[in-house]
Image (tube, rainbow, N blue to C red):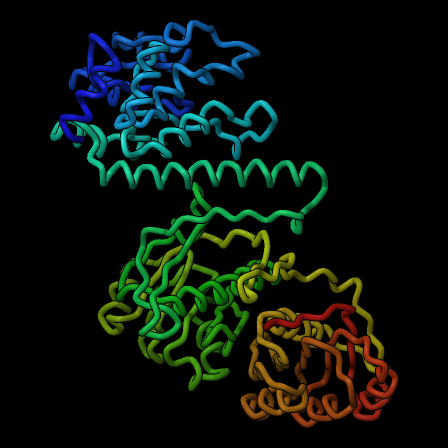
Length: 524
């Protein structure tokens, strides 16, 4: 800040320090250390009630804000800093003769620094946790960042103190950065309050107003969907996700598609492991679609069977293990095709080293279970399509056998696996399963018959006696005929076509068992 600006503040302030800080924080982490550094640098401290008490107990000189305003906290502490002697000191343009004259007329001294963090509304939502004075301080200081530095997080304290010690002030460039963070902070706070109020009135996941507050995660991405595209991962402001807590043990930086495919594989692996009584599951995903899925007795067996389902497609894919990677599983992956990402809840002794030695570019991730989705968002022009998250609403108790033949106990297990995998495959989708392995997956086709034919070609006869799942109903009998040609014994589908009776009759003629789930699983 220029000497002229400092002189302007001193003239308005009269005798005393020319640097003045207002501290009013809920989270007092690092507060005393920051305040001590300010006092050491010759700054004057003004604080609200609890903050002032904390500083006084630490032996630091502090002026209570009530002594500045002449008004004690009122209305159960709802009004403390909302006063011209506070906000005038924050919002004054120090180059304006009119502003300087008004400061002098009303005995208002400017502030050079505001330190304020807000009530923890997201932790304890409620009317009394809606902070008014704090956001007002933060926004006023951020607006006037040409003259005032605003600090909203203990993580910023070190930078601010270092600059004050080096330059006697917070530099203009840093003030601009801090102002940006301050407005992001209050925007996220307001978004949380709005979401809570709408939820309190029963608006649920699709409220009238959807205000999203996200911050860029620190880990960089190599590139976007293609190398010429830039990309970043964003997370809800102030929150961390399972991605933030994941550890990368080896390989190069992740890219946009690595994250997208890993998310798909990790969620499916956990869904299946939970549904199938915690048995080991291996999922291999390529371009967001599963190409190999298996439930088995050991992680190594699950991986080997998932890989054998479609080894050609597995090259360059993502492998997700529901269970820790042991020595046998690592050895199988070393012998198998190159994977872009391998993710597991844990890695056994020597397994990371074994894979890293042979697969230097493979990213090896260790992660906790993924948290459930809140909403599903998709860009639509300048707007958004928003829907509640995909889930399996109908359990097996709601399913109906509609044919003369019924599935055997083994075929029921295969049908359940096929159905759950099918919900993770891009539509039109058909999945063939035999003995706990998705041996054929037909994804993203414009017609269901072709999706079945692709799945059957991949299965190459291995689906005989197994199950076929279709993510939507069969509009004509030809889809069931294609499934029968693949050798399956049971077909599982939503039902609901105007030709259901014709389709059921054809299934009976072919000797198939058919199950209606009553729910559709389109995925686009």
